[in-house]
Image (tube, helix red, strand yellow):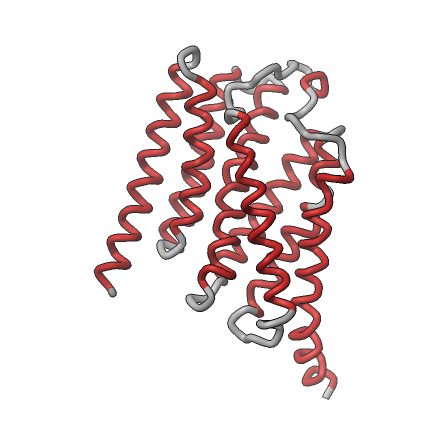
Length: 247
C-alpha cells in the first residue's frame, strides 16, 4: 500500500518541484552580480578574452530559453500535471535547473566548481531531452532541447577557460579542445535524438559566435569551429531528412 500511494504522490509532486526549480533558475540572475565571464584573476594564468569565449551577442539566447522554460513549468504543473508522457522529464530537468540556480553565484568565486556544476547541469539536461515524448513538441521538447544545446556549448566554454587558466593548454589549444568536446557531445545527442534539431541549433548558434569572436586573429580556432559547425549541421540535416523519409 505504501508503494502504491508513493507513486501517485510523486506524480503530483514532480511537476511542482520542476516549477520551483525553474523559478529559482529564472530568478538567479537578479540575485547574483552580472556575469561577464570568469574573473581572470581566479586562475594561475589570467584569462583575458579567452579564444573559447563566444561573441557577447550569443548570450541573448538565454532570454528565449528562460521564457520557454517558464512556459514549460507552468503548463507542466497545470494542464499536464498528471500527463504520463511528461512525468519522465520532470526529475532530470529539476536536477539540472535546481542546482543551476546556484551557478552564477558559484561562478563568481570558484570557476572550477562552476565548471563541474555546469557539466552536471548538462548531463541532467540531456537526460531530460532524451526522455521527452513526441507529443507537445513545442511545449516540452523544444525548450528542453534549446536549454541542453546551449549548455553543451557553455559547459565546454567553461572547460576551455579552465584548461587555459591552469596552463594545461594554450588559449587557442584550450579553445580547440573545448570545441572538439562540444562537437562530440552534440553529435552523440543528435544521433540519439534526431527529432530535436533545436538542440543542434543552439550548439550551432554558439559555434557561430565563437567564429565571429576569433576572426580575423585566431584563424585556427575559427577554422576548427567552422569544421565543428559543419559536422553538427550535417548530423542535423541527416536527422531532418530521415524524419521526412519516415513521414
